[in-house]
Image 1 (cartoon, one colour):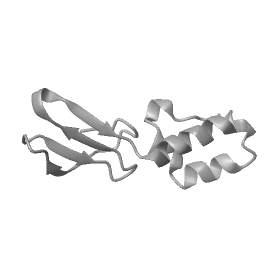
Image 2 (spheres, rainbow, N blue to C red):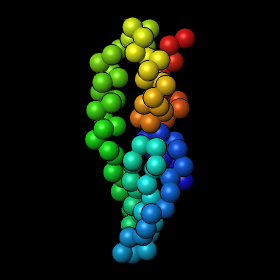
Image 3 (tube, one colour):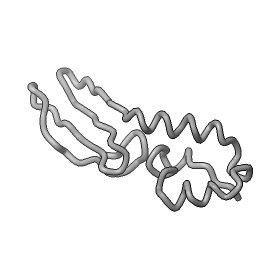
Image 4 (cartoon, rainbow, N blue to C red):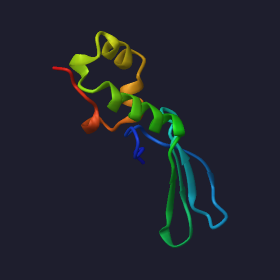
Length: 90
């Protein structure tokens, strides 16, 4: 199962009381729990939201004055966005 935050493969870490799986993304920390009647609850880490807000504040990658390379090298961009939503400075 793909993570809704970063598209990484989620790992099953347990199950709910009704037998549905609980899954964790090792890349970004998103948790999905499958409950009764097919209900799915997704918990997004606060850090993902804060990094996305910081990324919005920085604007266009070309205006980041060298910070974009660090953002990419440290894996922040891939940890907070799906591939189609990652910014490309080129």
